[in-house]
Amino acid sequence: PGVSPCPDHWIAARGALGVACGLGGPRLRAHPAAERTMRMLKKISLCCVMLFGLGLSACGLQPSTSTVPAMTEGSIKPVANAHDESITITSKNFTEQIVLGKIAVLIAKASGFDVTDMTNVPGSQPSRNLMVSGQADLAFEYTGTAWLAYLGHEGGIPDKQKQWQAVHDADLANGLTWGQPAPLNNTYAFAVRPEFAKQHNISKLSDIASVPVEERTMCVESEFNSRVDGLNPMLKLYGIPRDTPDGVPEGNISLMDTGTVYQATADASCNFGEVFTTDGRIQSLNLVILEDDQHFFPAYNAAPVFNTEFLNKHPELAERFAQVTPLLDDDTMRSLNLKVDVEGADPGQVAYDWMVEKGFVGK
Image (tube, rainbow, N blue to C red; front, side, top):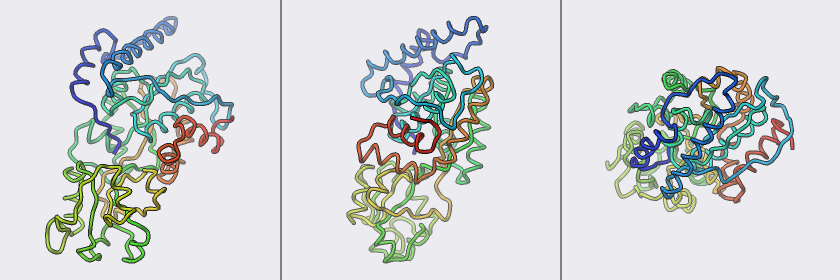
């Protein structure tokens, strides 16, 4: 969850480009009189990244293709001294990340900053590199993704607050400060049809053991099938090990593409489908998520991540985000993702409508 792959050769090539485009070096401190020049240089370096990306097919960096509508003032008030101060916001290129990125853009605009929108960056590592190099100032990131994919730990921390604290403390050394996490936890889960849950009286993963062996059919994606936080260790923890007579027989497990799993579960091609907890298809297909009562899956809570130097200059910005993030829970995120993935709405419009609905900004 939270990870969008990008070939290693792109990352290596980007490192070479950094000499020409100003990537990868420390953020320069400018005298106030030179700040406008620094902002211009920053935008030029971003243009280098964008232009370079155009030659790298689907994995290059590109400017955002979705904008946010004009707005008036709501409950989010401008930050003192934010006028004419530029901020660059990035995100990865899957639906939830783009929506969260647009919410971040709206918060920053409402706070009075001049926003450069670099959301919709193809790949987790390119987006992360923009933050670490100082080319971007703000992004929504997932605690589990940072801990496992960026910081290189082999196992996640299921406790949400402890996982957030761990990445917060570790990323300070990278010049990044994590804001408080949202309730939304985009982690793995298993979902079932509501009638199947009612028939077998199941609501949590430990209840799978009470389902007859022949009905323990599972649809999973190939990556989850082999992950260290995936299917095999999960089944072992819950006492229904794989390919055993009283566990989950090998013939009961079907490997599918991620998108296929949801429909296959809804169509009863399998009874237990591996899903991501904030995916809008859970809502549209009326699936029921089983509780991870043994706390196997790592926490993947989304949180705003700030460039530390920028945040030290404008600490009020973290307070503006703290107004919004408590309302971003799993149900809300599923609903917002649904509007984009199922109903075909524009991510920028979806983010704007939600912010207006909650009174954070006005029309």
